[in-house]
Image (cartoon, rainbow, N blue to C red):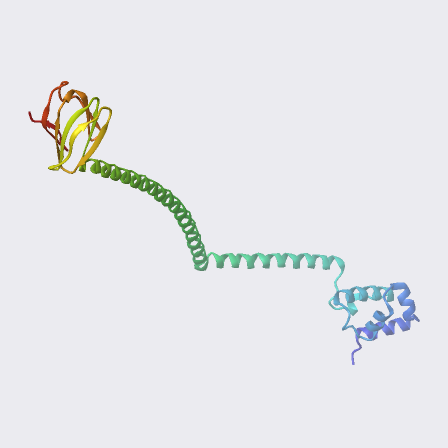
Length: 258
């Protein structure tokens, strides 16, 4: 039966009359590691460290490491192998990356790019619509505010005009007559066909009457009275001492019938 590497190294050590303690002192390899190597119990030792220990131990015993570590290589060979391995790893990585890039450059990449472009376009459209909505809302609020102001002003003007029309209409609905006597004067007045005054209007006195349709006035002395119809002063209708009869007063004005 062929001896193991550990058994052979142990025999060589014993043949040289060396103990494990002496080997430990010379090699600085821990006793437990030396014992594990000779007992071939190296399962718990890191393979990288194990090769180094075997190399040191073989040289200490004066034997060639190649005879005990078939996979052992000298430092120069190991360095070249490491460089070659590193180069192979880099080449493998580059091939893998190129393969992935080639995969991305296929139809799948075009599909992904298309999806991204569509998504970006949707985001841009949503952004534009959002800001456009805010702008339109702002403009509409300003427009409605202006319309409301114009409507309010128009309503006020319309109400004012209506009130003025009603006021004017109220004035024009009736006939108002005011007579002021500068001296005692005989007056005869009919309002809508009914006699309301037939007497002397004393000096300094004034009277006002209102008719819906018309008034008929007779003045005994036209030059000593002042007339006012619907707020309008009327020039003297005659000279002092002159009697004027059948003066017709209506909404249209005054008609003197002599």
